[in-house]
Image (cartoon, protein in one colour):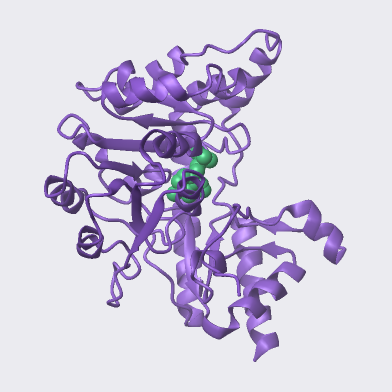
Length: 369
Ligand SMILES: Cc1ncc(COP(=O)(O)O)c(C=O)c1O
């Protein structure tokens, strides 16, 4: 029988057109891929329209303008352009880590229920996958990363550790203090990737970035994405921050024109649009509050999230509820292939989308009673 937690390829959220056709529905909403429902910043769209005229030219292979914009955005004295690599989505940076540091003799370590791409890229390099245990005590850290279990799994073959902070699909965080304690006490030869794809949301909820550790620990790689709060998932752009040596190694193995011009320009414009960022955070806050309060009323429990999604515990009714919601035009993310068959992940949408989700969820709960 196939192992449900192992996967040979990534399974993205179902798309709106397919579900419209399948169920003959006009209105379908997708709350499955942690995308920003506002759509990109107007400034980013206008930057894209402008650069389209010049698309006969190759893009800037070093993404110089985007690196400058990132430097301005993170404003840390000890970080310069030589500490940054831009990727075709942050997935590309994760893949560069695997290509550079993993092979069939190495071990890669991450927590059970981690972002599936870690498994996929490690499998490509034929590295042995080792999974640590999540926190099982009920409380605010339930299902988060247990760093004690993680440390106990390190061997002299461990070459890379992936930590998504916040995690996906859990949404939980590990404090930067705990991360630093962990890094301090393990071999400096191990590359530690701190994946901060949801950083802008989590920092809004009080989380401190691992960027502060970069000067001190040369084995740390921090990754960030423009696919989440900046709403550029479709154009593919993300970045990595690390020591000059690591970045220079990545630059040697990446494709010369890995980030297209439209992506570079849209990312620069997005970083310059603070009002858009604030609007997106406000929308997320309001949606988060509304959804949590409705879920509480329904007696549905969920993991403690610092992101733009909520992972709901629905137990033995999960699959049935997922299918009813789909047939009603609400696409959520089932988490069976993350080893979480009793959970569904919902991305926080617009006010209208959140209302529709709750309405349809209530309906589905009545149907299965
Ligand atoms: C934890 C985590 N890391 C990385 C990514 C990939 O982001 P990108 O679109 O920048 O490749 C995602 C996307 O869902 C994610 O959830």
